Picture 1 (tube, rainbow, N blue to C red):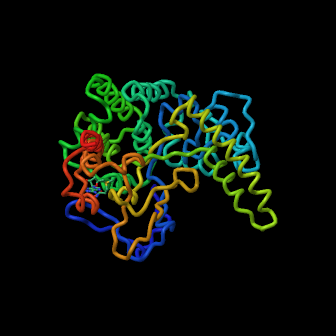
Picture 2: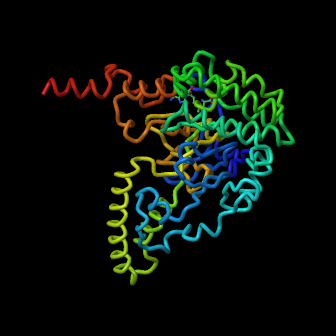
Picture 3: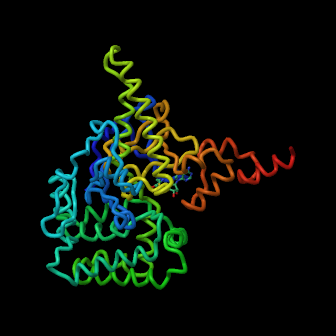
Length: 406
Ligand SMILES: C[S@@+](CC[C@H](N)C(=O)[O-])C[C@H]1O[C@@H](n2cnc3c(N)ncnc32)[C@H](O)[C@@H]1O
């Protein structure tokens, strides 16, 4: 179940905009850096390819299950690396803290997470060997998914499996189904496009096999009449489009946690420690720079334990090319935080930027093109509206024209 931990009706409200649909409006002033809300996902899962490559995260909350040293050794493929300042790694004894499911050996960061998973979905999905046919079918579904979705993944089939298992295990199926239906649904023609973006046309046969395998899974082990429609050809497209439209990426890592703590070494509590802190920081930052260069060479961009989740409140946040808030994972697990990136006035819409860092400074036309291609909407944010007189040129065309003029 999704739990909004800090919604305060007097802090912000969900409203409806004629063009953009639902939106979140601030009902007080937020200072830059202030936490607006945090929220646990309705459902989340690590990507299947990451798991295959031994990116190790708690099956329930995605907290990293490696020490920082194990993390960098894996990413650099170098078992001789010894990190500086091991005291900055809160996960240095992670091995001893891991909780394993006694039946299937799946790993969790705590007994609480194991219990939560067991109560919500793991009882149904546990591959305990007690029912080999069921275990095989789950593995077949995941393998089929990987065959139609090479890396980088943007969503995980485990989200669908977990939703089905949650519906089986919950005491209140109706509420869970209603929560799912509240996520932005979109119209059929858009859903078709989303679906083809996720799973390209050339994989049509495997996608049908995937749908059929999920249908078998439902019939044999879940027996949910309410879910049958989602496993028809049209329903499956709509289900995957719902995930594509609403899911939020989650990334966790022991390395990031250790880097953050090393950076804090430069903030000595007492002036007398300033010189020692400065030396420690400069040593640490050289070491960190060298590590990132090596990781980049060996593992490229895929550093974090990546996955995705559905978040009830966050999914109401619209995009703006001049956003006033951003998503952070302050607890290094799937609990999402929305943090103000500048002063937000009372009654101002709270927005995030759906574009990657490097695409944010592109021309209005380029940004709108990317949003149209990836999220299927025409951006109507204040920045796009104020730049509407600019020519319909992508950033590349713009710089080519500039070069010709020079
Ligand atoms: C994750 S949902 C955000 C909440 C959504 N408004 C709702 O009603 O559920 C993303 C969808 O919101 C709409 N949207 C978000 N930002 C927008 C923007 N800047 N301009 C126009 N539509 C936007 C688009 O329809 C997009 O597919």
